[in-house]
Amino acid sequence: MKQTGAAVAGTDTRTRIREAATALFRREGYAATGLKRIAADSGAPFGSIYHFFPGGKQQLAEDAVRTSGPEYMRLVIGVLESVPDPLESLENAFEVAARDLEASGYADACPIATLALEVASSNEALRLATAEVFDQWVETGADWFAGWTGDRDVALWLSRSMIMILEGAFVLSRATRDPEPLRAAGRSMVELARGALVGRSTSASRSSREEH
Amino acid sequence: MKQTGAAVAGTDTRTRIREAATALFRREGYAATGLKRIAADSGAPFGSIYHFFPGGKQQLAEDAVRTSGPEYMRLVIGVLESVPDPLESLENAFEVAARDLEASGYADACPIATLALEVASSNEALRLATAEVFDQWVETGADWFAGWTGDRDVALWLSRSMIMILEGAFVLSRATRDPEPLRAAGRSMVELARGALVGRSTSASRSSREEH
DNA sequence: GTCTATATCCAGATAGAC
DNA sequence: GTCTATCTGGATATAGAC
Image (tube, rainbow over all chains, first blue to last red; front, side):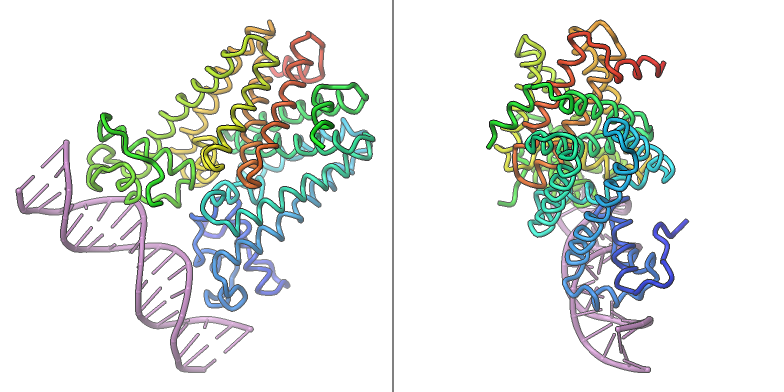
């Protein structure tokens, strides 16, 4: 099997290149992904990459991060909003993530995490792109939690926790090829949200209030 | 600044090569790290890498993962055992991690996470090495939690949660160059442990019991 | 705009002198 | 065992025909 990201008919060349790049950066990382492979997977000629992305690999990666990041968060929020009760919704969302990851052969987890770790200390432009995506995820997640808890700081803390636990679970689940870490992560999020949403004054909610 | 991993006098060549490799895989990842750079940073001649690691880059990486993994866990356990109260200890451990990461310029987080994500879908031998390290971390962490909760399944769940939250916090903290995710992660772990250690029957402890 | 051919460089790996 | 020189392949990037 040579092709990991199928070229989608009906979409323009620029989009196909970006989507092939996103899929490869997600599965194999930034450094290991060659532009020739992106061209092959997208069905575009090699030269088209530099036509649409004159800045080369880095510009393409930045575009991929800034596009796939918000896209992925929309997907997550969609799953969260598909179940009315917040605790059930959290457990369901991690269960969906577990099943999706397993179905992809433990390939398709977070679209930007591998790249984010790779570039954090070596490519400032790309690091900044991943940082802005993560910051936006935290804000968007906090909007969802804010529907259940009046305290914005608690909502921000829960959102941050959700993203961190999900990222960590992706690392363990991919490495061990086991969906259980994601399910355990779901239970952890349910516990955290249960404590916060019933209005129990936790040390965490107190501390997060003291931050500002 | 050319050298990121200093050659340590008094240690043998093989060790210096492995330590330089560990430092580079941790900061920049597996694919982006060249053997020539490892030779330069370790102060060893290029040919020595193949003398000590005939299997080349992959064998060196496997050795680095299997050595630095347990080493890092010993360090974490040492920090955890330096404070008697378990909840204070957890908060302190994440605080130490936050300060260490900041002090390293957001470079030195988990020694194997970047590599683990990179190789999960492309190099089975290395994936297995990271999986075995993570599994051992979960067991070792569970031993520590078991000193506070009688239920082995709860201890395993807390240990897994701790490692996942730490890994996720490292991703966010490195990307945003901000220690706050690690501190928020510490509060999350305190909340999870508080709920479990007081013997409250949570949905998580019930579910983890049902696993077996 | 699309595509091919190629320039330049550096990677991992190896051979062999010492 | 230590170290150097080199092989081969693939990387990013570019030039230029169509």
